[in-house]
Amino acid sequence: MYQTFKFAVLSASLLLAAFAVLAIFGFFDNLGFHGSLAAVLGIALTSAVGVGLMGLLFFSDRSRIDREVHDATTRRPDRQ
Image 1 (spheres, rainbow, N blue to C red):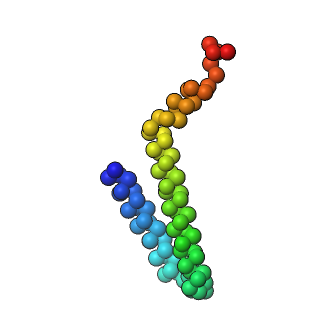
Image 2: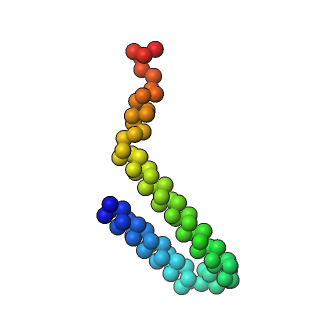
Image 3: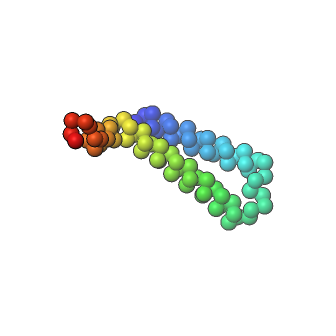
């Protein structure tokens, strides 16, 4: 559980650093308030979905449920 929390904090820190770099270089200057809000929310939500899906992928791999389903549905020569 500690590793998951550490990964989430690291991901959020990297995301905030990326926003800071974009703001320093003036990426949000010509967008206006609504455009900036849409860009920030779009990037944040896309990152959250990506992190969540990768977390589910690692959980699925470690739980070995996929392997059990694969083994149960694979045709074997002795079952034909």
